[in-house]
Structure formats: structure tokens, C-alpha cells
Image (cartoon, rainbow over all chains, first blue to last red; front, side):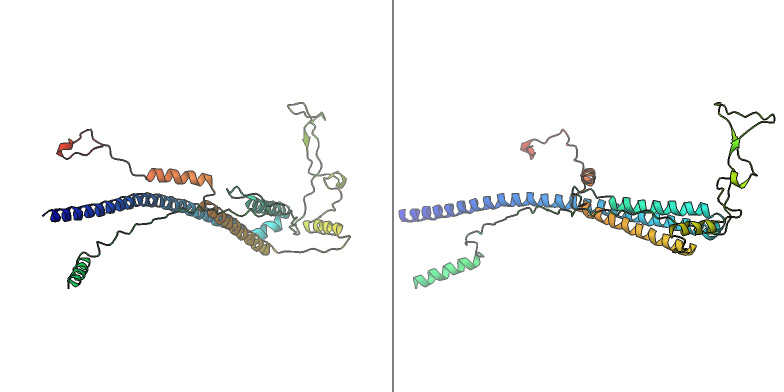
Length: 127
Length: 202
């Protein structure tokens, strides 16, 4: 009878130890999973931020491209609306001033556009 | 025989328990954030353009106005302005020497002036590059298309700076936008169910 009890106690003891060690492992796993979830939350937040940044950047880009197209269309409209041949024949001095001023303005626009550096903090390579 | 039964029993237990008696595998998770380090290239040196002089040439006669002379009244007395200085007038008829450009002969045209300017520049030779008005229009259109392209490229450059986080202004906007999209927390009511009835601890 005693042998039976000793056997039962041994089995229970071994079983208890096994369950305890299992519990320790599961706790460790749980802690790691909590950390993993936190990391995933951070990843999701970063992805949301990236998406928002991309959307805003894309909007800005589209706006700038549309502006460039509109500016060109405006100039082409001016060219198509006026009869330069007639004006130049009758008032060559006036048209000469306009052509020269327009060319100067165009050169300034190109210089200004190429001089605009982005918002980066990189150094100028003007040397 | 006993050993065989024991082995069979062990095998049976292992199969029916779905290997649950095997030791639990520990999960190893190793996540390391990778810092983005995209350094934009240095900007390219901007263009420096020199001015050019265009001449519009036609056979229109140039206006050679008379020089201004002091204005006098009917009695021959000088007419003064409010500030005391003498008023001037520009007569419609005058001698050639009294004109703004006394060296211009009668009927001097824009074409004549252009030829004189070119001959002065080239030691008496008449040589120049000419362009028709329609070609000038085409040149202007081409230039405007180049400007459009430059602006588009600059916009694309700015786009890359923006998406790589090199635009502090945009970063502010991103944060503001994200904050505005955050869900608003529900207001908790003051009522709290007792724990004994299934209420939760705060």
C-alpha cells in the first residue's frame, strides 16, 4: 500500500515539476509575444506615417507639375493671342524691347529655378 | 514481453497525445529596426545665363522728335511750374540739328539703324544671324517647354527629399495629419459595476 502511495507521490511530483517547467516556458513565450505585439504596433505606426508622408509628397508633386504645365500654357496663350508679325512691322522698337525683356525674364526664371535647392541640408557643390 | 508492452504503451501514449509530451519549443523573436540613412546628393550648381540682345527689324520709320525747349506765353515770358521751375515744350517742327538724334537722316528706318549698328560692331561688314517672327515664336515655345521640364524635375527632386524625411516642414504636416486622424477616446461613464457582480478593476 505504501509503495502505491510513494508511486503516486512520485508521479505527482514529477508531473508537477513538468507542469511547472512548462509554465515557466509559457510565461517566457508570453513575455516575448507581448514585446512582439508592441513591435508590431510600432511597425504599423511607422507604416501609417510613411503612407501619410507619401500621400502628402505625392500631392505636392502633382501640384507642382500642374503649376509648371499651367505656366507654360499661359505663355503659349500669350504667343497665340498676339499677331507678332504685324506688331513688329509697325512698332519694331516696342517689340524689340518686349522681346529682350521677355528673354531676360526667361533667363532669370531658369537661373532661379536651377538655383532653388531642396529642403535638404546637404552642402552646395558650387566649387 | 513486459518490455514490449511498455514500449507499445509509450508509443500509444505518444501518438494519442499528439506529441504533447515533447518539450515545448521556445519562441525566439529578434526584431531590430533598420535606420534609414538616405543622404540626398549635394545640389547641382545652378545655371548662369548671359543676356543677349535681340533686334526687331522692319522698314518702319524711326521717330526723331524735336528737343524740348522752354515754354513761353504770348508775351514771350517763360511759363513756370508750381515748384518754380520752367515748363518745357516739344515743338512739332524744328531743324534737323534740333532733333534728339541729329545724325539720323530724314526717313531713317529701323532697318537702317540696325544695319548701322551691325556695321559698327563688325568693322563695316554687314553680318548677322537672322530669325523670322514665327521662328522666334517657336524658340519661345521651346524655351517655355524647357522651363516646364526644369520645374518638373525640381518638383521630383523635392518629392524624393520629402519621402525620405528630409523636409522638416512636411514632417510637421505629417504629424498634424496623423494626429487629426487618431480615433477619439470614448468618455468613460462614472458608473462602475461592483467587482462582485462582474465589474473589472481599473
